[in-house]
Length: 154
Image (tube, rainbow, N blue to C red; front, side):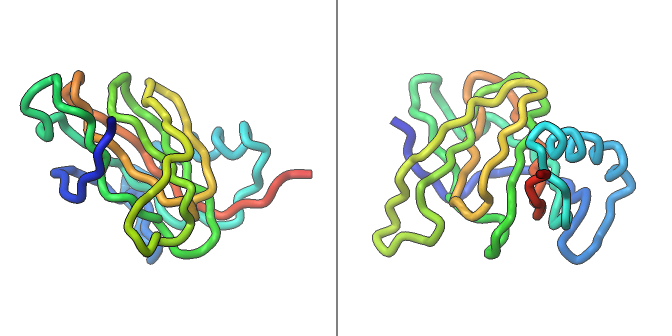
């Protein structure tokens, strides 16, 4: 079984921040957002954040240890989409939970599990709490998280 956790060493690079901060590398990743929107039949209304994330397998001492997911969270507290583009073949799933508000009892109920694979995109309602998982079998997990608002193309 997968157990929750709250602290994980990680590295990140903010490509685009909700305050308008832009990385010099942003233009190299906007085609991923554009492709995601096109595939999902969405028209972008606002980019909120684009963040590169790097997790390593330092969490596990033994391969027999269960996976521990990181702290469930929302990237924004208002309606938006979240898309995760997996940049390498690895392990360490992304968990999407049923909850759109923090449960009083602290218990999150799993709705969906996405296993990472190179060039795969996971798109979901960003109001759902979600959590990453550090890799165990592979050394690294690289992902681009994109938060945005969009309208369905009719």
